[in-house]
Amino acid sequence: MDEVPAQDAQNKTKKCPDRNKALSNFGRGFHALADSTSPSHRGFQSWSPGDLIGDWQHHEKETSIGIDDYLKTISLMQQYYQTTFGGKAW
Image (cartoon, rainbow, N blue to C red):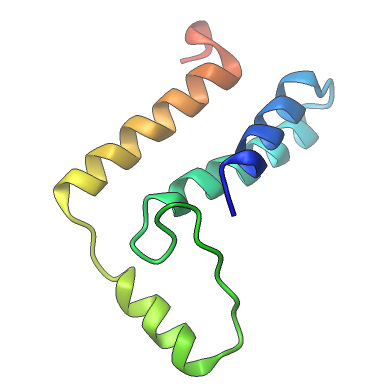
């Protein structure tokens, strides 16, 4: 998986006249980007729920976040918001 779903969601958000649908689209992209900074998803790794051992391993990787990843995630989310809605919305 790559960054395309987040970009597609952002493009849909920008073009959508319906605020509720736009926020739903934004949320999909926001979630994809946030997950991309998680050790379980770094680099847009996919996750397939349903495998109990895999689910546990996935959960364990997400139980803590280092300060560098924390700050990177915040910065990425701020950039995504600003490039989607513009600086005035911030």
